[in-house]
Length: 274
Image (cartoon, rainbow, N blue to C red; front, top):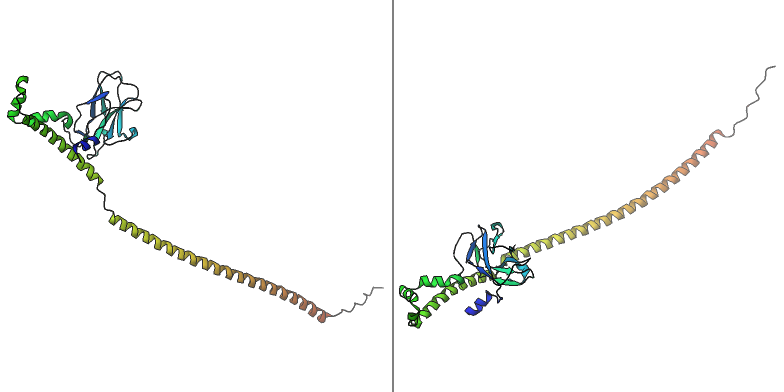
């Protein structure tokens, strides 16, 4: 992958109406984040805001957090509360100035969050300063020479300056790419898959056992129902037999009574006194 391809992943072509100032490589999430910006022929409107996005965002709704931009203020500053800042130190973020019509008016250089305070500007803003401090003393003296003498500087000096700048950018892009590649490493799920298979097997065995128990219960209920019906029939037969016995008993009692007493003779008339 070429440097141009990598650089295209971290930048977006935006017509600048706002410029972010003094963007650092890293911000501490233990401190309030102060974001400064400069308006380029633009006046703040209602609904304008500065938002923090993860690098590579696609939609306005993908913002992490935002602050409304002050209107009619002498200082163009928004402050993000430290309690709301992301704690992820591996993600890469950027500021974006979003208008009230949800148009992107500016996007900052990428940065990260850290648990420590580091006060240095973004690599893309401070590369010239780093180059000046990293050049040999002979080159520094040449760089401070008069404009007329600069025409005599060999081309190799300019190439070295360019090489130093490219090395700085290349190191930053390498670190960024290493982070992105690390996120794409897939986790090995073999052990998790085996555990899931075992759980599924146990569940299937439990279901089979429960089905067998249900079948046994249904058979038991069927047997109980048959036994109940047979008992009901036996009860009806016993009641019928009992009724027959009662009738016979009543008939036998009536017959025995008639045989024992027969017809009673009438009593003679009672004598009346004269």
